[in-house]
Image (cartoon, rainbow, N blue to C red; front, side, top):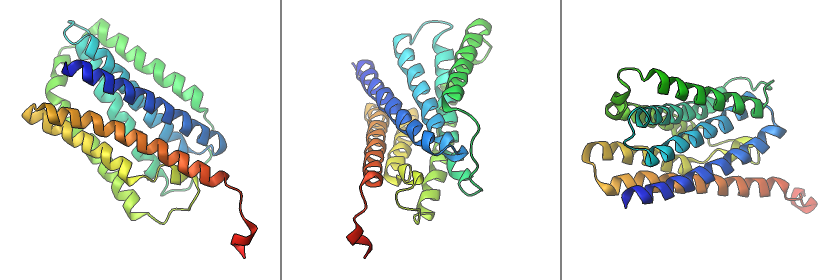
Length: 231
């Protein structure tokens, strides 16, 4: 029963994440900067990680398949958080216009991940099973990256209203992502169902908050300016 519930929650997370990637892609079309580019790519890799997790639920005990799925699940998830954190790190520097197309980079990213998955299936390197024992290390790295993001947002609250940065200045949403990773880390130690469910549900709440924030900011940017407000 637990696996079925997790599959449903994971599928909802995947759909919400893809919707968020689409929204950030729209923002990148109007502001082609390396900062904005890292955000949709980061959430795209998070979506890819959900796909591998979803596939792992279907093939949890298949020899030679379960381990590569989990390897790519944790690696793509950490890579996603790294790219999102990089967007905030780059915002401290000069904002340069990106020469790359998001669609092109997305295709290359997906092809690279699929190729890596195929390589793991063919080679089946010794030690792939160790991913189940060192998964906590990747979770700790995710917590460190999310902590940096939260620290950056809290110390830079004076961001311009209505700018693209406002789309991702969501400390509460990132806090829920942080809580989800922390709950998963607790589950690694106690194995309780409550902490496992908490890690999945908090992720869904976070994605919903991100989408809501995008909607509110985009609606505010498109609202006509009242001349009387400037007087």
